[in-house]
Length: 444
Image (cartoon, rainbow, N blue to C red; front, side, top):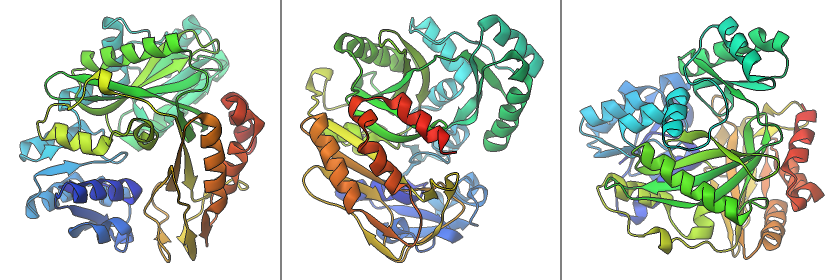
């Protein structure tokens, strides 16, 4: 198997392959020559320059490496080419198994406009908004005026907060629409946009699903990803502290219904917005890949999602039913980023001079860092994920507090102190994500 990614997710996939006795090929850019994933894989091949465009987004180089090294399959991880239907199609044409969903599902769910239409047909509630893509700002303004403000402008092919702007006044619409459109064209090569009513004070709740090629689909519970800074997730947990059991059941059923409507197999995530009263939810989007925050689901269910993806790609049926899925306790994940929260969160690449990660019962660390590693400046700033599991939320918070207090990453600035501050706050104890987000926004 060739792993078309880098960093902690590449390491994560390689480790599963080693368990399953699957030989691995790592690809790397010139900036990642000494990276951990290149050292753990059975083989490693350089695919281009430091920039993502020259390496991890270079389809031709990746496919060439796969063919040259005799790879039967490619796992794309998350980010980069993981939701690129063209790349998945090329893999299929080269008789290389793409470890993810079908090309058709990726196209339909990756396009936010088509995804909305699919959900509407399936009877799943969606946020009021446009059903067709837009490129004209003045046409968009007319629609937004009819929907009523605030609205949110989103990229049809977007993700990770790129190509997204909240618009609160009619007179600001055209400028913000054009800014978002330009951003998404640069990031995704697609300038199509859509508009949704902005749900005030909403919670971000996503459901993990896994399906096989025989039409079987399971939901593995929710993750509350409401703590975000400018649409970038910082802390995720399961179960959600605000979700009522009746609503949880309805959302889980809707997630399965959504996945089946998309004829989906492999691991994926159905993302919902939950209104401030906690009574109504709306489909937001589907992520047709493994998520950064998948470990929290693994911690409470015992299911290895990467292993399940590989088994599904190999044509195996799911080995469990919905009744077999059991949830135990509470799990929390904190993302550790190489950035400076005291200086507008600017990225802080550099050399790791000293490193220590925590351990103990119920504590997991996913990272590709090691002593002396030089963090490149050309990729995402996330360098580690600290995940804890407790028999209840109180114990999980206590474990996270202890774990974060033990981490040492010397030589670079990180958001470690900020995460410690969040976990120790009264707002987090109360589940008040919105107040935490307001404070994060105030920091710049």
